[in-house]
Image (tube, rainbow, N blue to C red):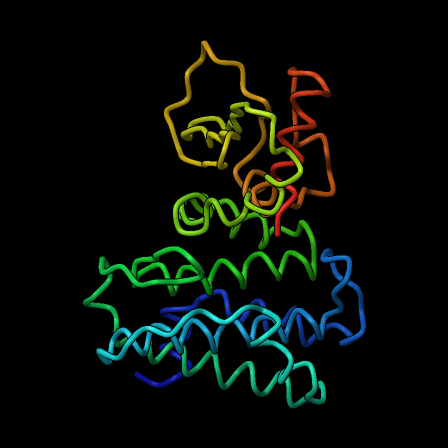
Length: 255
């Protein structure tokens, strides 16, 4: 399979992200307040390299290397010119797609990643989720972003493949505040957050007898899990009051 077809098959959100990034000035701001477009591109290049580096080691039977932090993987790309950075991202997305193809028959095997474990199949999902989320950071709530964010696998991946790391930093602001919170989307399982000695996150059947902290749509709920929110805040509804809602939003303040 040719590289373009392989990327379209395994990382189908790549083209939309690339188009959004190249349509903007590299210095334009984004929904990540400290990042410009060029920073988002550098971040994505670092993600593609690291996901490929770790997964390739597993597939080749080599010791799986410790996952490098963002401040270790991104600086080389931040030092490039804007054209070089975009070209490097394209190259590493291509390399990652080739590695993902090699792992298609190994999807349920667990691999160490960033202080936790991910299934081989989740490596491709993780890059896809990064492309979806950071495209939203560039363009906001357009129809394509909403459709992509609403896919059920985006919620499942955010809960089970990422999960606690999304909450860990925010948990330090709530060290002595035990509580449970539910985020509800009609027709879908609730996302259940628990704050205690350690935070936890899972999916559970929606119980009509339990008042959720937030009722929203699928796309907005994924944004909330990643410390973001839609521009139209009427998509978020709550009756629990500011104290409980404030705790929930603090826990969801993201990386």
